[in-house]
Amino acid sequence: MRTVYVNGDYLPENEATVSIFDRGFLFADGIYEVTTVVDGKLIGFDGHIKRLQRSADELKMNIKVDEPEMLEIHRELVKRNNLDQGMIYLQYTRGNPGDRDFAFPPEDTKPTLVMFTQEKKVVGTAVEENGLKVVTLEDLRWGRRDIKTVQLLYPSLAKMEAKARGADDAWMVQDGFVTEGTSNNAYIVKDGTIITRHLSNDILHGITRKSILACAQLLQMKVEERPFTVDEAYAADEAFATSASGFANPIVEIDGKKVGSGKPGEVSAKLRELYIEENMKAAV
Ligand code: PDD
Image (cartoon, rainbow, N blue to C red; front, side, top):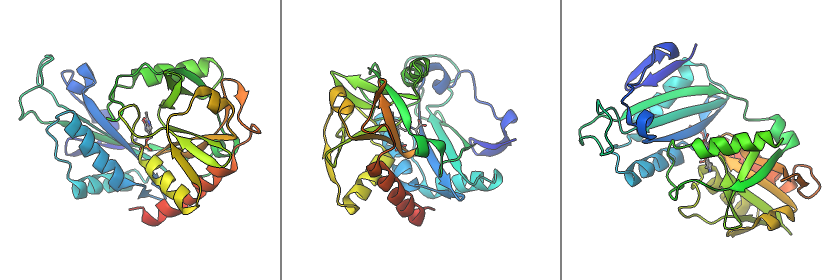
């Protein structure tokens, strides 16, 4: 049984509880981060913690993220759960006002903080070998996708629609242009140039995205940060998706059409390798 963290306490998972009045439960009024663990160490921790503070500020949540304290809790959870490879999930909500009301609770309402570990193989996966199939679907999410909120119902529906169509994931499309995957940033490669949507409120500013683009620069690959169409994606030589737990995962099929050779591409493989090397050096 896992040991999880709730508001200052480490508890067996079956003893951890949150109120039915919690704003996270009633209004999806919560933010989260997922940090990957490799060899018991945290990847990109600093970036995740800074984005957490930004999400809190954008939603006017009364939260001051204490980075050393957060690191301590993350490490304690890794230790108590003997986590070698996997993720740490962290969620903050606006807390429990003791009733349901659309208006925010009083300033002094304590936010709820829960954290737990998830074991998952992240290095040397089958996806790395075989790639993923995606389908394109209309992006029906709200307009502030740069904030990492727990309103994940549409991405979850999109994932299920992808599975119903025999694929692994969905790439979401707005006005004919790909925004991102259900839980990852989207990329294509054409004639040696990596193309990925520019940062705006339309997509999550991925921590992995930032690091992967830095790796592309180290490898002297050409990058264009701009929207790309579904037709460009069909005609791409390669495609991939990045996220904390997937690193750079190759996409081999889009809407039933093979991408390039239909095999995982070289560019994403090189980026993935360098990403792991660089991030393992910097892991904490
Ligand atoms: N998802 N875009 C969306 C919509 C996401 O939910 C995520 C992350 C990303 C990639 O961000 P990062 O590189 O910082 O992980 C992009 C996490 C992993 C999740 O929901 O499980």
